[in-house]
Picture 1 (cartoon, one colour):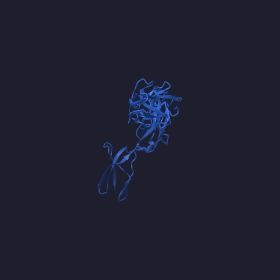
Picture 2 (picture 1 turned 90 degrees about the horizontal axis):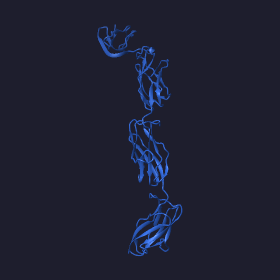
Picture 3 (picture 1 turned 30 degrees about the horizontal axis):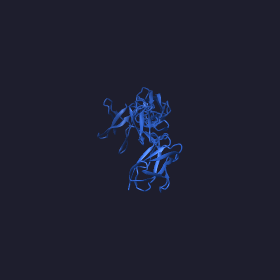
Picture 4 (picture 1 turned 135 degrees about the vertical axis):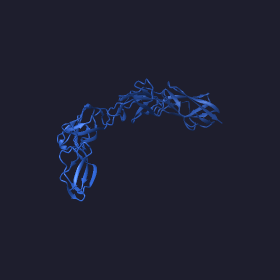
Length: 384
């Protein structure tokens, strides 16, 4: 007859002979595992009727059956962050707290916030299971509970769920419309987690400030435009920061706040020109040919920062030749209709005229408005 023995890997345990050994085929034996066998790994030793032996180490494991499950034990949990997966480790235990390594089922999970995901863990392997879960709500004292379909359960120790890690930044204040040279209202920044909630900085987070276009534009740390800055920072534990700005060039300006480690944010601001303060020649200095009528010479009004700024009504502007008589001014391209002044059109913010030189050399045109606007002067040269 064949003999089959279970040889424990733990040398302190006795070898167990299996009863009721039967030869099923030339390659298969059948036997019964005795009750009360100690848990652990066993090798199988087979002895044939001629006394020949074969041995396979650690091919058999005795476990405690799932019938002994009395509950589930959680490994301790540290404080966690909203929306960030964390590891949960569970052990099926008996009434004395020992491992029930024969449990291979699954359990449902729940927490106090009712925002836990996923809510099923398993199947268990040798009485243990691990899973990454996420909590989507803040709480100072959360607790997980696991339960199987037989009513066995277990609870974790309490743990806090803190704000998530900052993964994005937003400008929360509204876009602004302000006049050139004015200080803006505070621009508010927020750090947010993956769920869009406030997420305090773990460590100091520098934010570079940029404007497009950058001309005549200045950023300031905090409100009130008191401290010029090209960077601001979120202090550790802070989820909000503020800066202000001042721009002198009229038009749309896109502000960009660019943190070191998370995506930045941008917002368009509108800066408008002030009331007119001066006029300027739009046309660059001319080179005239003696006796010929020039191309159009154009004027416009500017504010104190050099931004084009249309007057509220037409502005009569006297045209003066310096020296006197060196230049003559005309309303038409043929230089047939001589004039001594032009009107600055309030809608187009433009006045146009033509000029002809009376003699060769360098001279200048002075455009003198009838209002308090600062006059403009342009130098030109006439050649034979």
